[in-house]
Image 1 (cartoon, rainbow, N blue to C red):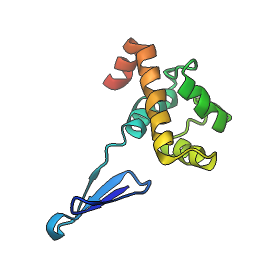
Image 2 (cartoon, rainbow, N blue to C red):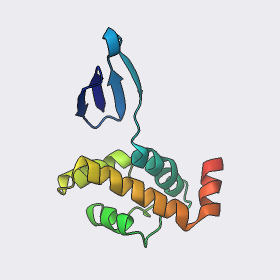
Image 3 (cartoon, helix red, strand yellow):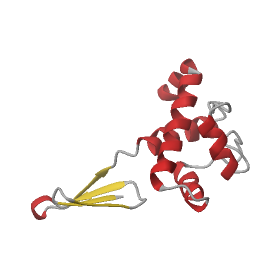
Image 4 (cartoon, rainbow, N blue to C red):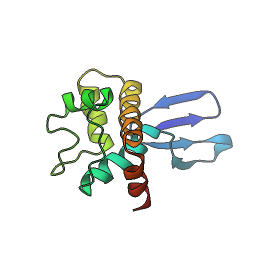
Length: 123
């Protein structure tokens, strides 16, 4: 979660929402954590639907699989982006590194099989 008060004060937390208070107004909107959104939209949804989307040759996927021993392709227990995010933090990765790995794993998997990725996007 990123919280803004005016244009200067910025703090990061992990909920994925943005809170903003310009001129005393407060509203919530979805943040720009592209890696988490892509991961849940393609890898989590695809693997949970038993569609083998994960690119096992991706360096980012291999890094994630190292902290998530069942592996991302284990369709009986597919993790969400937030499960992986917190595991990466527990293994010493920074928040930025964790989101970058989620993003890269997603993009590598999407690029690895574009027709399958489009099928997932259409479901």
